[in-house]
Length: 348
Image 1 (cartoon, rainbow, N blue to C red):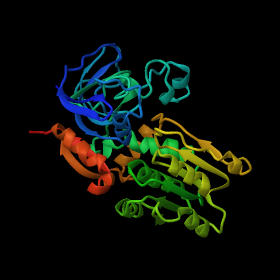
Image 2: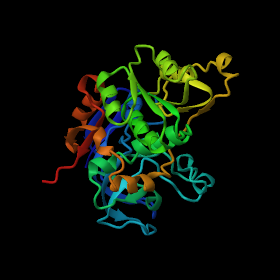
Image 3: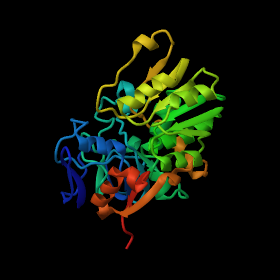
Image 4: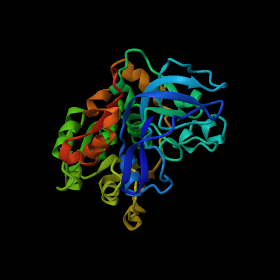
């Protein structure tokens, strides 16, 4: 089969690799129907995630069809159309029993495209299939479903839930890429009083407006001033960091009010300064986290009911064999006007 293989920082290619097979009785093999490229994949290519070794197939978001299952798999069978979760879960360890699947100690967590071969391929092996695959509701198209593998659960759990968004809150989302836009959408589920989006890209700010932001501001202007003006000087109740660079994290700590929450979602490759000399007195809560995907079944139901505009984030579509071209577009997202890139297997 063909797959996108990581060869070290700055190097990847669409290569011929062996087909995956069942290695454990809890495994399933999925024929990929649609897959996406995540900002985390770009971090891997930059060398920001050193655990990914050369030779690994990248990718952790996909939908497809089950073609083979191990003897212990009970919840899916060959022929089922499924969502491949970005997080795998053994279901037995302490963290899985607490629904903190991202911290799984039994061989799960974020493993696809990280510690084992991932989904940017024609086929992928999914461990712990009963908890790591989700049967798809019939009305849900691939464009809608594939964004529920990572982007929407991450934004909702690590951003909105960790940030404790409440009715009437002022929410600032720093970064209007796919995760930031999903944070805007899912923040709206809690009835905030105001959502403010911050990004340097005018096209992404326009997308943020279209998906529910009440105000937008360029990161190159003075976001802290706008937030202060809109909140009578109090600051944001919740600031969600959705970029993964020191400047965006530090901006969140500047715009949050005393007693507010900073929810860091972005994957950081460099240290960020924590200004405790300013924050110690403000009673600010700062959270980090890897998505658990415990919310995925609920989000799937909402998407199937038409309550989540997931496919609205998809700006570019490619055939699966155009993986290298798609990476080129996604890595130049601002110039290309790219939000989320989806690659689909040809039905011919």
